[in-house]
Amino acid sequence: MAKLLQIAFVTVFTVFVFSGCTVYSMQGKVLSLNPDTLTNAKKDISFEVSNVKLLNDLPTYTVQGFVIEEENIKNSLQENLDKFYPQNSTINPYKVELSMDLEREGFVLEVTVKTKSIYKVYKDNNLIKTINIQSEYSRKQDNKTEKNEEYLDSALYGVDDDLYNTPEFRKEYLEYTAYVVDKEIASEQEHFTNLSLRHSYSGAIRLNFAKFIQELNKLELK
Image (cartoon, rainbow, N blue to C red):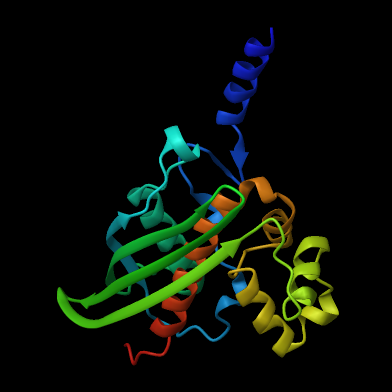
């Protein structure tokens, strides 16, 4: 009987919905950037993600219970670019290629995921810029430190709007939460320590996306 209950639990767990996506492949809301990631996006330009390549420490369904697939990362990057640079049929978009190298330290309850990415930006099939981005995100059983206590509590219990509207606080809060899209996911990252592995991966990827888009916005593009 105990064995049957264990099997039933595993079966239920494998169809667990993780912030808008099944455990089979990370995608959707958990990889979506906060609208405040970029507040001064350039106008009249757009981007199309043409290719994504993922390397090294990728999770597997049989071991970690979820996967990260290139097609879904491509779609998520495109959705985030469209959020700040909406597609326009009258504009010839810049093309973006991404190669992302992932490295994991730790497992299950205390995890750090590091990313090293190369983004290549093309215009009319000509390479105009290569942007290198590194990011790192950690989730542990206890994430609290003297420096981040205020941001952690705000993420866990819901950030106060007046506090969030303070520019200096907002900047640090967004960095701490890896530019998470909303309060719900921010709280999940702190509350569900059993999901540290997944939140470390999603946070590192989001943080990488955010830094890329911020650097992209500094370019003199027309």
